[in-house]
Length: 225
Image (cartoon, rainbow, N blue to C red; front, side, top):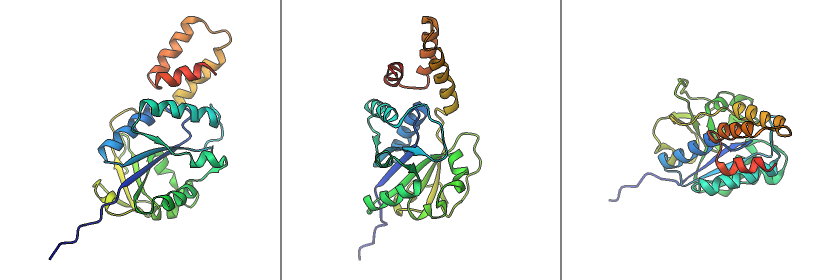
């Protein structure tokens, strides 16, 4: 008599955000997660009009340009354009429904930071997310709130994410770059304010500050704007 094998689904993951701009924190965390969790695909999913962030540094076309430059260097990552193609307020629940329809035979993982996880109750229809995806939460080293929330079952076993298509929350303790978007915003604001009268020394300093946060191709792109 043969023993039935446990189902194992391909894990398709989506990392959403405004990516304003995409930076090393996004890219290195995503690359590490794809490798360590054995994700079949990891899509960066930019939003056109983020509901929780009213003011952006760059328009949607500029953010897409920078994403394309980023994945040329970080070529294990892909881009999903479903939200920018619609060019309207981006609600994750709408994207999850379309994703589930597109990947009916796969396990769907939604990647987010711990701050987003802790405020998920402010998101549209958050109560039913567990029906459409697993959550993979990028938890900082000082995060101790690993818990079941929002209908998701807590697991510390990566393999559980492949055994069923939705419903688990997994905390990934990535010990790599934790970059503040506000820090990048402050540097960019200084660059733009000083651009007209900037000196060579200021420009070099700005480039050095940004080089710790952004790939060179994106720094060069920003410099052309």
